[in-house]
Image 1 (tube, rainbow, N blue to C red):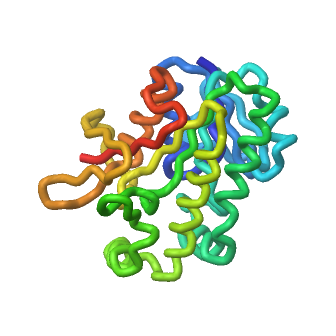
Image 2 (cartoon, rainbow, N blue to C red):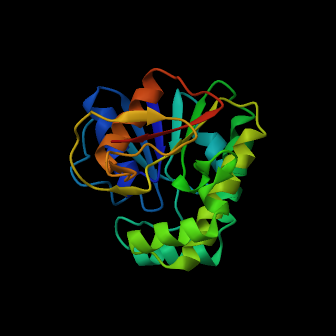
Length: 235
């Protein structure tokens, strides 16, 4: 397969690149600075290019030949400077919905290309019809536990809005909500899959390694199960 990855030097994006390459896929990796590929990713079946995800014309131009486009877009690179990404996300939480609209616009001319958007856990339900992004007390507790400022709740709601943008489209999109606690770790290949509720372990924690999130994403790229739907994973 030919898989495009936007945000290919980020925490999740770089691991999606590595996982796809390990499985023998061809990868077109996109980042703000194409001169700085992810460490070790200089294999022959990956190419690097700069791309502005907010420019639908530019996105459309890279779609020919791609089977799947994975967007790990963030306003900044959390792998290199988490604080900057957090600040920029709080300053303009609408950027996630803007990116979703740009991606959908680009797909109008390439409707066969599938889109996998890596979003946030804030749109997951905490109860029937109640999502984390709308539960102020719960979201503040979650942000406190992750060491994030409470102002980041605006960005959490921004991710939820991006999912709602996708839900209005008839394109071949899939939205991935990672666990509430996601960080670099081990690739186990063992996790559970959910849809609209967070997957929690025996201690009630919603967690996944970035490596196993990449496994789940490439699995979905290879064998689509959640077209025009959202899914999540956790231990």
